[in-house]
Image (cartoon, rainbow, N blue to C red; front, side):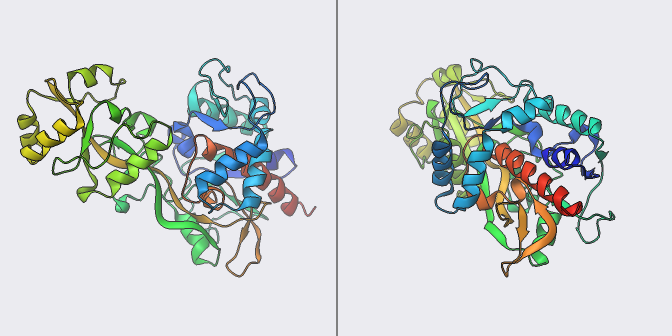
Length: 388
């Protein structure tokens, strides 16, 4: 949306093709809450300060060295202006007191509200908006254009990987694979995903953040045999989400159980689906074909699962996005395998995010990548199309 708005403001005639029907427009942004923004002083949305250098260091650390330093620098510096840009187009943020976050700003009304505001802004700017338009190849897109911006995400909705897709079912990866097959350089790692533990009762697609299982430290997590395989209380920061997603993905059947006693259940945050209840551990073991002796030993070793009744949340790994993308330069131009620039082809958002964050993640960075590089792609595409 930012790419389309920016290009239109620069004088280009813009057509935006959205694969989803109107109610599902906006990709994974519909499920988002916040975006990561650097700022030198308190703002209406964020307390304290979050310097550009600290932002860049956080992203570089999360990428584990796989992120391009030049792209990380562009992202960090560009993030400073994004809140004002979005607000100018009608996006409303929560004040910094609700909730407090020094590093991220939260949308009032969530990602759907932000998408709706940007959609209305694009309509006012004269962007031709078309929904239910599934584009599978840039060479056969049916639109005669001087420039094209791929801002269609990766390929996380492909269920062949065996994960729950927390995001949009319309992020299918045709454009990503089309570009790679046509000679674009890849970024990131094929087969990699940003995973978190989600309720196994979640829908295959589009469950969003409410499917995520939290507070594993209130009980114990066991594998399909009833054995614990990690200390649940060892990690308490936001990195715990991805850590548990990877752990469950490595288990047989990619399945685990969070087991709570009555005390743990009482302290559990609200969930979409209520935990399953069993009067005894033996009954629980029988219901899930666990080794009852192993389950009892796990409970004894854990020390947090003692008082009946016992409660269970079945878990699977859920993906928000994949770790493969196309490579771009600092001007959001798609780079070919031979190092040349692909004329008139630009990319923004999760289709190119692997070049920034590798297979890692920090809260709110996905939307910032989309906004910062969307703005750049819109400017560059308009300049290319208008011959400037």
